[in-house]
Image 1 (cartoon, each protein chain N blue to C red):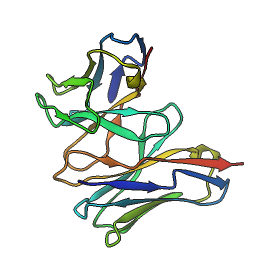
Image 2: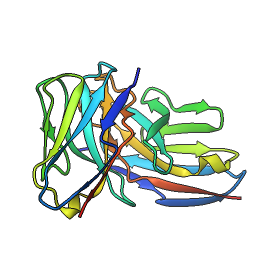
Image 3: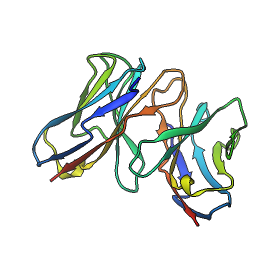
Image 4: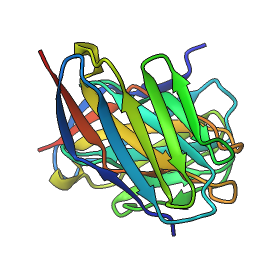
Length: 112
Length: 112
């Protein structure tokens, strides 16, 4: 079955710098890759997603890139701000599978 | 629209007691999921349902049972609570078309 690995588990960056979180997946048939942000004590919420027919997607300060050949996708956050501090989860799914397969999460710490 | 609502938000149980967590959605989504989230760990799937009257086991189903008698409700039962079931439980819903998962606000359960 599908397996999603996420790195790093913790990432500490200076406010204003960029942050990159990477995920790899095992099933080449996976075709949907969302990223979720979970603030402390809150529910996970979708921040950006990408489908396998697209290589990159941007939404203001966040972007996701997908490399289907290498089976990895990455979340990029530019000009980080204190409110970006949270746990970020990647996931993967495919049409024939009912489940989203989740990465273990990355705790992003923005240092002032 | 309320989206996805979990009841209760907090609960303390004694070992051996039973309880039911309710997930209610008004989004008309086919798929519903129950996850548990423990400190430093990601989301682990307990059970899921792909439609009214159907349920299936996830990654960590032992000690839990579920029912989906109505499309809008997904119930998670603990027959005999154990301290190892102390966790935050999240319900989520999704459509079949590989789209965003919507989460409830979570239930913090402590078993003493």
